[in-house]
Amino acid sequence: MIDQDKIKRAVRLLLEGIGEDISREGLLDTPDRIARMYEELYCGMEEEASTHLSRTFHVTDSEMVVEKDITFYSTCEHHMLPFYGKVHIAYIPDGEVVGLSKLARTVEVFARRLQLQEQLTGQIADALMAHMHPKGVLVMVEAEHMCMTMRGIKKPGSQTVTLARRGLFQTDPVLEERFFRQLR
Image 1 (cartoon, rainbow, N blue to C red):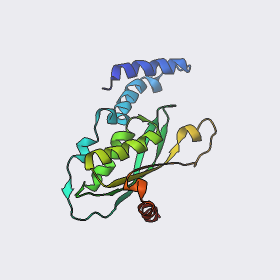
Image 2 (tube, rainbow, N blue to C red):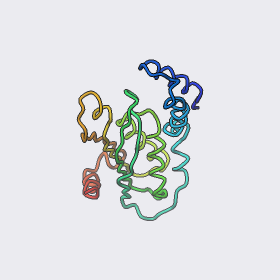
Image 3 (cartoon, rainbow, N blue to C red):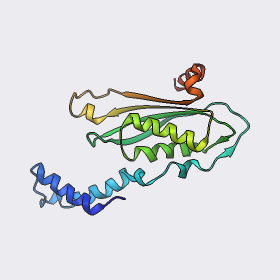
Image 4 (cartoon, rainbow, N blue to C red):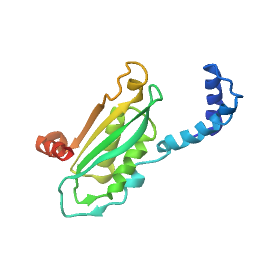
C-alpha cells in the first residue's frame, strides 16, 4: 500500500539533499504532487492480473490472436527512471479468449510497478498462461529507457527488445514466424 506521508517526507529530504530550498514557492506543493503521482504510477503493485483475465469467452477456433502496439510506461527499478514503448502479444486459444482490452489491462498491471523490462515481459506471458490456459503465448516488448538516453551513455532512440515464449511458441518456429510477419 502506498504511504503518501512517507513519500512526502522522502521528497523533502531528496530536495534538500540536492541543495534545493524546500520553502520556495515552486517547491511548496511538490512533495504532495509527487506522492499523488506515485500512487498513480505504482498502482499495479496492489493489482492482480487475474482481475482482468478471469472472464473468458468460449470459442471453437484456435487460430492465433495478436494484439500489437500496446503502449506502456514503466519505471526502472535500478534508477527509478521511466522506460516506455510497445508490447505485442500473441496467443493460441485453447477454447477460451479474453476481451482484447484485457490484454492491455494486464500489461498495465505489471508496467505500473518498479520493474525490469526482462521481468515485465515474462510476467505478462506467465499471467496469460496461468489465467487463460492457452496453447501458447509470445510476448515481445520494445522500449526506450531514460537511464540510457538522459544519463549514463546518453544514446537517445536506442531500443531494448525482449521476448518471452511459452507453450507452443517454444517448440513451433512456424508460429513464431507468423507472429513476426503480423508485426510488419
